[in-house]
Amino acid sequence: MTGLPLYKQIIQDLQKKIFDGTLRPGDRIPSEHELSSSYMVSSITSKNALAELADKGYIIRQKGRGSFVNSLENLMAISDFAHTVSNRNTFQSKTIGLIIPSMKTGVDQKLLDCLEYEISSTEYLLTLVITRENQEAESQAIQKLVSQGASGLIIFPAEHEIYNESILRLNLEKYPFLLVDRYLKGIRTNTICTANYEATKQSVSHLISKNCKNIVFISPDSKNTVTQERFTAFKDALSENDIVINKHNSFFIPLEITDPSLKKSRIARFLSGNPASDGILCANREMAAYVVEIFNQKNLWEQFQICAFDYFDHPRVSYIIQDIPCIAHECILTLLDAISGNTVPRQVSVPASFVAR
Image 1 (tube, rainbow, N blue to C red):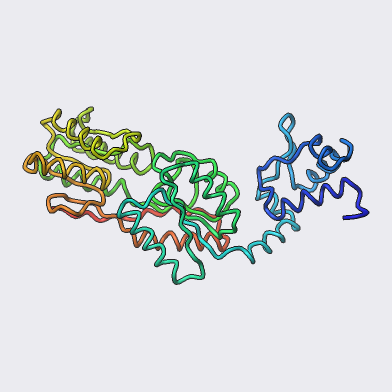
Image 2: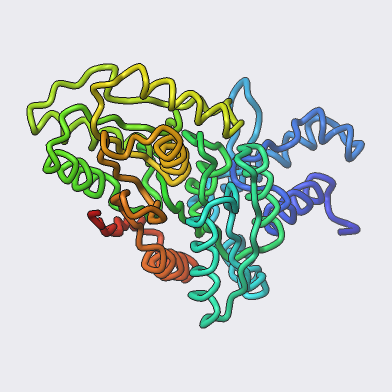
């Protein structure tokens, strides 16, 4: 860069950082004062550099806030930038990142197994990160995988997920990724989910067909879309069958309670305080396991009919089983399509199967 005017040197340095991804869309650009100090130039020199970058479309300047890297959509309209993206994509890692909250349940384990099987027939490798239900760890995993050149991401959001800025940013930048098992309301992106609403209504219809009139929905008190869909379907099914809904129709375990024995005792206390209950729908396998333990201890099998998601261990429990192999297949199919350049979001709802017992 020797011989270049000083403001041109600043421009080239900042362009290089935008080209190689050090500065990403939305990132703040150093101010005129900061550039003047870093390059030991006058404020007019740094001002001219920022003005030219703005004129070329690399940055946007916001009065009172500063300068920021332009959106990916606008950057892609600049031929020099689009060329560097093409070059980076040629050499990027043939890796797909899987970000998952835990490996505690059979559903988690089967999803990993099925995804690995699906990806084994492609040119990609699967890299696993477990966030342990921590949204900050989820954000860190996203940033690390993206910075290391992962071709795309499959994200199973944390239990309490509502909005994660790192996921929203992926969406804004049109980075190839998808959400599995849940989605973000109001945000159009690739999502692969079980048809929770339909499966829940089918299970409630089964309980009603067994003459259950006081059915209880038992679930962790999560605000994610899976829990909300299942509970909405539960209430709709009761309403459609002229069953009055009241506070005794649902019991939610606070997420801050992690001790299994405490969860079980709370469920037992709720059931003993509602002797009219005659049907139970468990929103997940964990809740079903606690209920089965309580029934075995208190000999309550003749009092209740039970349905549960993903619990098929007991001959008296009817269950909804998610089609994990199909979910995994749709995940890889959708993500590879996004990696190839398709930016039109796909929302796939995979039917579940109901087994009456």
